Image (cartoon, rainbow, N blue to C red; front, side, top):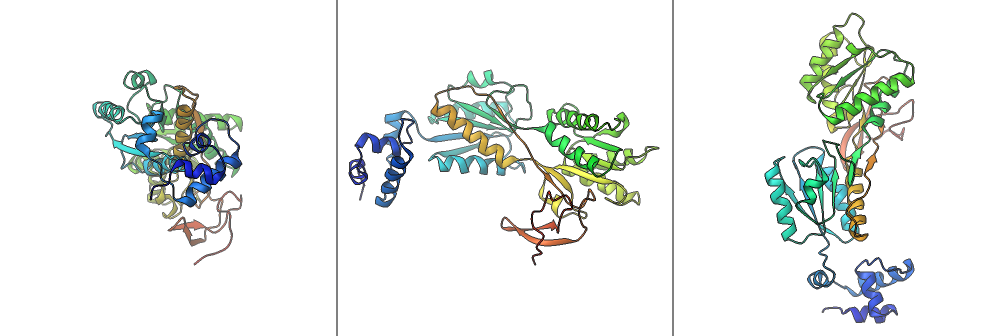
Length: 366
């Protein structure tokens, strides 16, 4: 049996317009108590809104388009999870289109979403290089998240790469290392430039000499990290610690250290970046800086909903910071590992950290 809006209003002791504003999440002023009372009555009565009628009345569909460059990328699922968690809590649905880093497919996806009358678009790793290119194709609010090209700031959720690199470099310096090398990504990537900048800033802040030969460029893959590690190990005065711009290259550098008959962290400490799953289960487990993918997704959804509700098209971007995860490869934790349940999956985790950064419990689990 269909529950009418007038029945909810009567049961909640409010007018029909007030009940309507509460149920449609209107920006019209209303006390939190009144809104919650109306929503509670609606839930109790089993009210189901007529979304088609609401769409015609408000010119909104409560649907957001997500254009994703590669849904198989390991960083995309947590971003999508963050986006959808926020949208669901606010009564929005989403539709996902994979564009395979193809400008033609991405443009077609924008047109398709326009025809479906979505309320806004979130681009995850967009091929487009500027906001103007998007505005020429849609009048809907849009947000970029996890952009690989940071040549514009508006409506963009991105990682504070400089902070993350300083966090990793500073951690190694705090352990007493003065000869800290850096394995960077490809030179033309924005993340590579920013992480190199953070590495150099932290060295300068701590009055640690910068040696150009200590910076080697990789390719984001384990093989590139291995080659860079071999080069660093071949230096007359080799480093005592290495910060790698991602976990794959950190693992590659670790293999180079092992093949040279050396040990991590006893001879050379390692810190990576991204906190990929394998970083927890290799031996030694890799100390790393998280790429806050889920948080970026959440912030992108919040920003887009703000633009929609305020009827705006432009807002300043947001930078999200990762955190340091201390494991065995840096030498700052005990070498004993315990097997612990973590968010529904089994993962290796260090028993305790002398710095107290991670993990936050010293209880062993079996």
